[in-house]
Picture 1 (cartoon, rainbow, N blue to C red):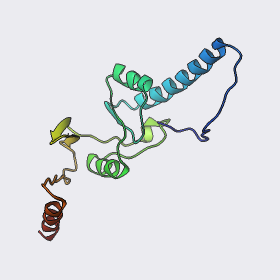
Picture 2 (cartoon, rainbow, N blue to C red; picture 1 turned 180 degrees about the vertical axis):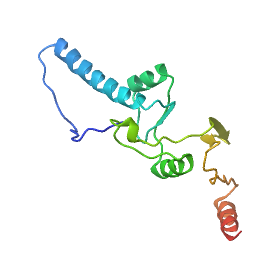
Picture 3 (cartoon, rainbow, N blue to C red; picture 1 turned 45 degrees about the horizontal axis):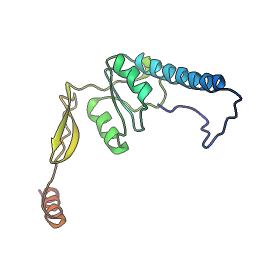
Picture 4 (cartoon, rainbow, N blue to C red; picture 1 turned 120 degrees about the horizontal axis):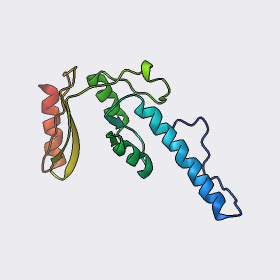
Length: 150
C-alpha cells in the first residue's frame, strides 16, 4: 500500500497549535483513504499486502467487506500469484490493466501452534504444500531428503 515515490524517515514537523497537528493527521488520513479507494476500485474481496496494514485502512477494508492480509512473504506471494492466475502489483491506479487471482476458499487453519492460511480451489491447481513435523531437526531433515528422493 505504500506507493509514495519519496519516503522521508525521521522527519520532524514543528507546529504552533493542536489544530495544526489535527490538520496534519486529517491530511494523512485522507491520503490513506484515497489509496484504499483506489484498491477497492478493483472490485476485490481479499487484499494481500507484504507490509503492515494500519488500523484505519484495515477498518476501511473491513467496512467494504474486503479481507485484508498483511505481512505476506514475497516467495509466498509469488507462488500464490502463479496458482491463482493473478499478478503482483504495486500501484493501483489502473484497475482495468490488473489481472486478479481467484480461488474458491480461503481459510485459517491450525497446525500445532501455528496458524496458516489455506487457499483452496485455485484455477491452476498444480500447487500443494507439504507440512513436515518432527521431534528433532534430524528427523525433519531426513523426511525432507526422502521427499526430494521420491
